[in-house]
Image (cartoon, rainbow, N blue to C red; front, side, top):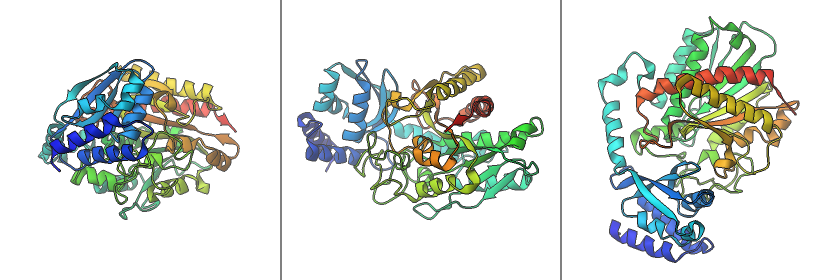
Length: 444
């Protein structure tokens, strides 16, 4: 079917459907997914939807769950999402959206040719500057990241342990990990977990984890107490298949590479799985999978997280992009977490340290204040299952959404010039956060 025919079909489906008309909704859902699928973004835009205050959370659910649109950024005053040229009016006339918004909704274009951004990035990555001596001059592929960490373990043998594999991805790639601590320092140590690239297209998340890893090592001589008294467990590439796919085939791919259309790993964790904020449609970018922890990547990370050697974990952060947010539990309920007071102090402190370092404004809030999410790593780390494993304490569990802000038009395709500034502001915040979490432990 030609593009115009698909758009007309979709318009008919959406203008007559309601949120409760499941068969029709699935038809429109899969039609949009078909239009957005593939690796060519020539006819695709990044657009911003604005509506009356108090309606955006419901509109987010309609766009993401009912329509399978690729939502990039949600703030209190707008939602940015990827859409095919010509579909703006179709979305605005969706019956369920009109019912929620009361007709007070508008769409403006932020970037009218996403393929142009992809092409510019590809041209740069194929250029000679990628081979620069400075690792943080650009982004790197999975195999190169793995080799870089292996090299760190050789350069810093007393501080770095390279773990070749904690499990396999869908396509059989190793999910590697590193453990950073002063091996000569004995005794019980506080432990921290950092991970990146759970969502494949969020390259700055992986680069920031790499920057933090390096800073832990290069600053050890000046501040030996950090690695003498703590261990940092790092999973740099949670989703190696999806990440490689963003390099070779589809830059804006989000999920893993499970057949037929991938699973959103950050909706697949075994905590309140499938209770909102995710999709049951395999074509959706927030498809939660057939059951909780169905994906080998999530299984491997959860098993390694809960290994006996990690009983002293007191903090965990999942690095994502974008929107400049510091998110704390919960994503599944509006009820405050038991440690809301300290969690808020910790999140607000990260926000404040970033602002004092770079001037960038991050928002500190509970995940559900943004929108509902279930089956996330953040809530799993704060779950009853993990609390039982830790037995005598809980841990600080955060998601940090990195640069750019919600006002940017480049979205996930963040220029490499932003790698170091992002790493620097996050590292400054983490140094404060490490001290805060050790001074204010969360008791069971």
